[in-house]
Figure 1 (cartoon, each protein chain N blue to C red):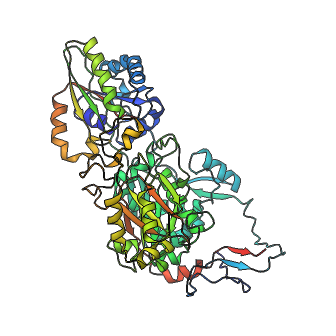
Figure 2 (tube, rainbow over the protein chains, first blue to last red):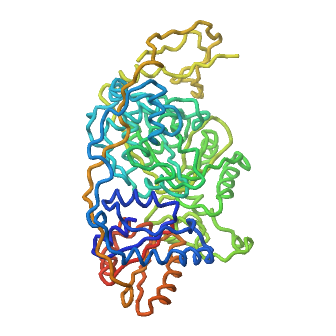
Figure 3 (cartoon, rainbow over the protein chains, first blue to last red):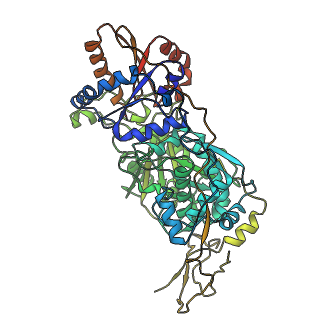
Length: 445
Length: 144
C-alpha cells in the first residue's frame, strides 16, 4: 500500500489489487501513512499463488473495479479524509474486577488470549523502578502504526505479561531492536508466520534469572515466559500488528507466545554472541532474530565430523532468510576441543552447505534460481546455500544454550539479527536483590 | 512486592553455585506444605483501575486522493509490481485485458525488487519518480 500512497502523493491515481483477506491489513497500512481512503481492488488470489488459471479468473472478475478505482469521481471523504482514531485516548481505560478487566482487555483485542495482570497505576509504577528513563521517555515509534513506545507504555504491557521490573532494561533494548532493522521488524506481519526469537547475553540476563540451561525455551521461568510475551503485547498494542488484521501469518507460530533463551555463557567454550558482535563482555544485550522454523536433530555423531555433517545435511528445502545453529554446551565443547573456533564453524557451514546437483531434477521441477529464496539478490555460486553478501555478510549464526546433551537445533528465516545493549538503572544491585529469589521451588515426590 | 527467600530445606544448588558444571539452578524441597497461605487483601474481588496498553500515535497529516481520470482510452497506464511472485503474473493478465478493452491505451511496467519500492528501494527513488511522471495512472499488484 505504501507505493500506492506514494504515487497518489505524486498526483497520479492508483488502484491496488489486494487479496480479499488482506483488506484490513491494507487499510491499516494506508491509515498509518495518512491516506485511509486509498482505493484497493479486492481479489481472490491467494498469496504466493503461481496458478495462472486462478489468477486469470480472479483478475477478469474484478477488472471493472480497477477501471472504477481509476475513473470514478472522488467522494468528499476521499478528497479530505477524516481521522479514524481519537487524538487523545484516555490513559485510564477501565475499572473492574480481575475477571472483568481480563474480559475487557481480551474483547478489545489487547491480549494474546492468556489472562493478564491488571496494569494498575501501582503495578506500573513498580515496573518503572526497573529503569532510570522517565515514564514519558519515547524509546521508539513502532511501525506500521507508528505507535509511541514510551517507557510507560512498555511498562504497562510488561505488567500485563507478568514481567518483573528487572526485565525493563532488556524490554527497552528489545523495543529498540524491533526498529533497528525495519525488514526484520515487519516480519511480525508476514504470511510466513515469522516469530521473534530473543537471545539474552551478559550479566543482566543472569541477574534477572533468564534461563540458559535445560529447557531454556520451554515454559516454566517467569523471565523467559514473560519477556517474549511482553514483546508480543508490545507488537500488538504499540506497533499495531494484530492477528488476521495486520499479522497475516498463514499457519501461525507458537514462538509468538514467547521464544526466549539466555546464552549459556558459563559453559560455552567460545566468546558470547554479544562479544562476537562488538559489545563488551560486561554489557547486557538482547539479540532479535525472526525465524519461522525450529528444527531439532540427533547428530550423526557427537564429534566434530558428526555434528557438522548433521548441520549441513539438515538444511531444509525452500528455506529463506537468516540462519542459526543451536548448540548445547556439550556440542560446543566437542567442537572446541577439536580445535574449532566459532568462526571456523560458521565458515565451514557457509562453504559446505550446497544444493545437490540433482536436487531439482529429482523433484521433477525446473528451477534455475538459487536454493535460498531469501537471497535471490546476493552473489555467489548457485550451488552454495549460504552466500555472504551486502544484505547479510554473516549469514550463519551460532548460539550456545541449553543443558548438557547431544541434541542440536536450527532456526531459520527472517531478516538479519539485531543486537541492542540494555541500559541498567543505577540501583540495579538493589533491584536484583529484591527480585532475585523469585524462582520456582519444586516439591520432591 | 513480597520478597521470597529460598526455603531452608532446599536441596538444589542455587543459580550462582560455582560447581564444576554450574548448571543446576532448580530449587527442590523435600517436604511440601499443608498450611493454607493467606496473603489477605482480597485481590480477586478487588476493583482494578487499569491503564491502557494501546499506544498513542502522533497524528499523521491526512492526505486525500489524486483526481481520477475521465477514461482510460488513450492513457498510459503504469503497472507496478513488488517482489512477491504472484505480482508480475497478476500484471500479465491485467496488461492483456487493458490491451483488449482499451486498445488506444499504453502500458509501462516497473518491477520492484522488494516489498515496497518507495519504502525500501531508496537508491531507485529518481528512477521511480521519473516513471510515475511518465504515466497517467498506476495499477499495482503487491502479491498479497
